[in-house]
Image (cartoon, rainbow, N blue to C red):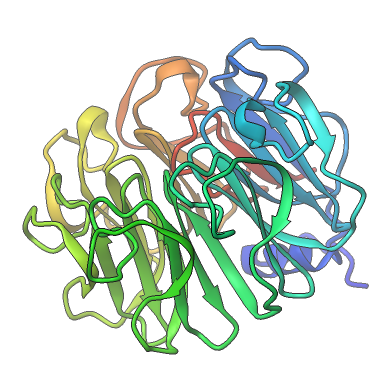
Amino acid sequence: MPSYSGVWTLQAQMQNVAAGTWTGQPQLFAWGLNSTGQLGLNDTANRSSPVQIGALTTWSQTAGGSGFSLAVKTDGTMWSWGNGTEGRLGLNDTVNRSSPVQVGALTEWSQVAAGGRFSLAIKTNGTLWSWGQNFFGNLGINDTADRSSPVQVGALTAWSKVAGGYSNSLAIKTDGTLWSWGRNQYGQLGLNDTANRSSPVQVGALTTWSQVAGGFTFSLAVKTDGTLWGWGYNGLGQLGLNDTANRSSPVQVGALTTWSKVTGGNNFSVAVKTDGTLWSWGANTNGRLGLNDTVYRSSPVQIGALTTWSQIAGGSGFCLAIKTDGTLWSWGYNSYGKLGLNDTANRSSPVQVGVLTTWLTLPKMQQSSAPLAIRTS
């Protein structure tokens, strides 16, 4: 097992946390809105700076939805807390929790994602599971009945990545195919129509999808060739296509082949290129694009000139990012203190959260106002 030397790169640290071989003691921190206990701090008081959840040092991955949070530990157990309405915590009831509670007893969870009011997860055996609100078929189990505990989506064992929009779901299989289901009123499923689906349907026939992200009512994805694609609602330019016309099937964003990561927030998008530069577009209320103004953009614009951005997470009107040096940064709407800057003032450009250089991972959280982040002790 590797041991911590103090000179690990951020990428190496993240890989070893995910593999359960990182010995740098990954701790979980939360801040922002806490009205239903979604910070996991055993109360409902908001926080405006990062606070550690418990004393455990075994956290691996996190996700945040509307009023609730999910996490996986290095031992493969899954935990949830916050708003339990519609069964979104997966605890076989609809009760709120203000501290982490284990979902079942299994130790084979590898990935979690949250939609607006529902949850998704992949096990180590490649099976896909869902629970919570299912009004639009967003659980993918061929009906519209809510579930309060995890239910398997089909019988396949080939799921690789999963993401949630507000009321729709997206997933990539190990063969590189892209699938979607749930609400589709703006074409966010990418199926060339606006009909809802209650079970997974393949998006096109390509086998070259590598990453997918869900925004509020739009979707984004990166292919293995480094191209960036968007579809769904585009009324605020969040697809990055230099217009505001909705799309019901994937459309390439520009012609570049250097996109590495993408995230969708509440009507805005942020992406990192392979050169470490950071870009944003879409709605810019409260400065959520990080461009030092509040002007909307309909195509990608670079945030500053730095080439050291590593991770990004778009939330409800704000954004978080981690640099290659392990520092954490935030900008945008700061209601409830969700920027973690010990105040509630909005920021229109990236501001460092504290002074630490040990931040490792950010959540999938496009509808959350309660950020989660993992750092080493």
